[in-house]
Every structure is written in C-alpha cells, then in structure tokens.
Image 1 (cartoon, rainbow, N blue to C red):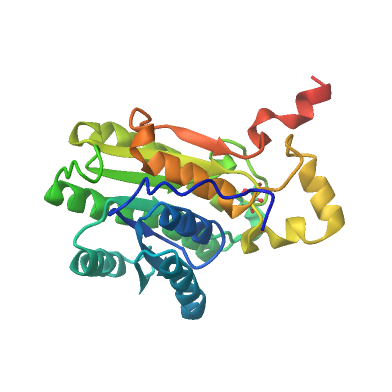
Image 2 (tube, rainbow, N blue to C red):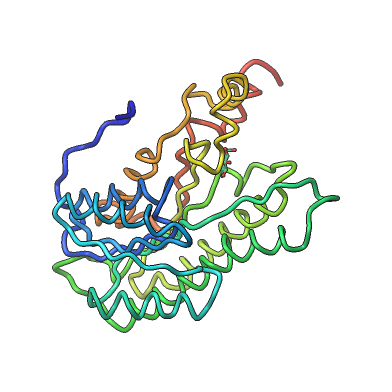
Amino acid sequence: MSSVSRLACVDRLKNQVALVTGASSGIGRGIALALADEGAQIVVNYIGDRQAAEEVAREIQSKGTDALVLEADVSREDHVESMFARTVREFGTVDILINNAGVQRDAAVHEMTLQEWQQVIDVNLTGAFLCSREAVREFRRRGLVPERSIAVGKIIFISSVHQVIPWSGHCNYAASKGGLMQLMKSLAQEVARDRIRVNAIAPGAVRTDINRESWEDPAALEALLKLIPSNRIGEPRDIGSAAVWLASDESDYVHGATIFVDGGMTLYPGFASGG
Ligand code: BGC
C-alpha cells in the first residue's frame, strides 16, 4: 500500500453508476476503485487489455458493488454510442462520467507525424467530447433522482498540469489538455441550468505506465522531484480521492473548476529560490 491510505468508506456514491474511461490501468483504475469504495457501480471501459480490465472489475466486485467491463475506443463515435447504450441497458442509467482515457505520443515537432498528432487529439479531446455528449443526453433523458444525488449528473475531466504548463516535445499532448480545459469550462457554462455539474482534475506526475521512464530510473526520478514541491510522485489514489469528492454532493457548489492534484507542480518551483 502506498503512503496514501484509504479514507473510511461512507458510501457517498451509493446506487450511482459511474462510467470511467481508460479504467483498466493507471489513474483510471485508481479512480474506479475509489468510486467503488463509496458504493458506486462501475463501468470499466478499456481498449486492448481485457484481462487487466477484468481484474479491476473483480476488485470492484470484492468491495460489494457491481462492475461492467466494456471495450470501446473513445475516439470512435459508434463505439461510444454503443458503450452508453449498453450501460443504460445493464444499469438503467449513468450518474457520473469520468473522462480519463488519454495517451501520449511524444516527439519533437519537426519529427512528429500527423498520425501522432491526430491520435492524441482524437483520444484525449475528441474522446472526451463524444463521451460527454452521450452523458449529457442520458442525464437529460433521466432527469433528477433526488434519492441518489442533488445533481442530475456529474462529469469529471481528467486533464493534466499541462493544460497550463507548456511542454516541449509534447505539443500534441499539451494542446489536447489545453483544449480539454476549454471544453470543460464551456460545457460547464452550457449545462449548469440543467443541474449537470462539470469539473476537472489536473494531475501532476502520477506513478503510472504513461510516465514510467520518468520515475523508474533513479536519476530521472531525482530530476522529476525537483519539479514537485511536495517531493513525492503522486499515486493513482491521490486522484481517486479527489474524484470521489468531486462526484459527491459534498462538492455541489463546485462547478467549472479544475482541481490541481500535483504536489505543487504548478507553483513554478524554479522560482522558490530565484526570480
Ligand atoms: C503526463 C505525465 C507527466 C505529468 C507531469 C502528465 O499529464 O501524462 O507523463 O509525468 O503530466 O509532467
């Protein structure tokens, strides 16, 4: 177990259905497990590694709640539509959407292929749009169920510190996350009157496969820690607990906000002793 210990389970999301994209590993898995600890039923979306997704589902079920494993490429309109249709058939509705699926395809601009650019925009940005659109449609169709939540639905975007920190060698990724920020805010403005709550979490460096090369090697980790005032790398649970709070009615007055869960990475740590 990491240094981040589990808070007491109080079933803050009981009887709610949460669809988590990219839930078979990393931050998505951490969020799926944290929401399940609070009693939510979870749709474990994945692409490719069915075994990993099924393991996450088993862990969720061992907590006494339901899980449904659904493969879908979030950048494909037909996949997203059938994933939501299936979710509604199995669970009756969706209450919480976590737009987590994301990829990195790093390259210097002069070497970046159109495919590397496009894939990152397609998954990180278009995927979040397609899933949000289906969620909004379903929230509106179902309407308010006050026993479950005082919101009609909740959408949480998993962005990145790179929605504000430029990142050389990662133009496609940083552009996708900057775009996600405006997608989140514009959508929040658009659906506020429908009592649909829309927010984002911007993680810093969290220990997952996406950034393995930055933490596995001790010299790389030392360089990374210079960018993190809290002096530790994040764990998926750090993001999970923020997601639980944002999905619960405890944060009902939080709307259109980004919570940075980054150990202070966005504090310009280089300025701690300079400027
Ligand atoms: C990226 C990671 C990176 C972190 C901090 C995340 O959005 O996916 O690779 O370590 O930002 O730079």
